[in-house]
Amino acid sequence: MIRILVDSGSEYLPEEAQAKGIEVLPIVTNVGGNDYRDGIDLGRDEFFELLEETGLFPTTSQITPHTFAEKFKEARDAGDEVIALILSSALSGTYQNACTARAMLGNEGIYVIDSLTATYPISILANYAAQLRDEGWAAKDIAEAVEQLKGSVKVIAMVDTLEYLQRGGRIPKAAAKIGEAAKLKPVISVTEKGDLSMVGACLGRKRAFDTIMKHLNSIEIDERFPVYAIYSYGTKNCERLEVRLAEAGISVTQRRQIGYVIGSHIGPHACGVVYVEKKPEKGGIKSFFKN
View (cartoon, rainbow, N blue to C red):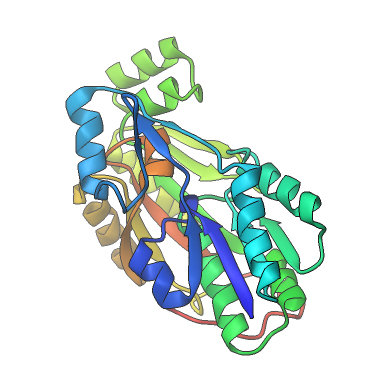
């Protein structure tokens, strides 16, 4: 059997992962000395409400090599192979910890993939891997197909407040204060190297949405894959963005909520789009889904 393993930076809720035959290891988020596991200890709305009510800044902890080693050994002892899809190495040390665990046990039958992305792009990749597994693909071939696809799975989003980017060390405090006073709305994406990139700092939400739409209109979306409208807390901005997407003829498959891990760094009222960019196929990817 092939086990597919992700961390909670992939945004799966427990029931969603179970339905796909995917196992989620939690990246624990700490608020005020209390640890929370995404979708288990607090609902996502409750988590963001906690941040707003307390004014506390959350911190996240990496999954340890020991935890990965236990999971990898459990699979090996059962005669299973493992494909582990991990939050971008540029955003977390969790990927390196997974590699350390694999080295401790030996590499055979353990495929650790640096997703070089975050949030729902990881779930698209994991769902794809699960589909290939269910179609009977070998673990090595699935890992290669995911590696080939991952550079095409994209996210672009508007951040509604600069506070969380500043407190997380992404922007200087003085710049955040000036930006908040000017009502700047950053538009961010994930680079090919897996780090956050500022696409633009826009005066107001409308211009931020204009920036997102300009980007989406400059590329071709692969309609064989889902398009997600995503939000952190509060759907109003996401609903406004969905109107713009519909006007541009972009069909949204689902609206999905961002969880603790990424939400801790971008704060409430953020929204964006997750999609697969259509690129020339190089072979190897021959099965597509939309769910």
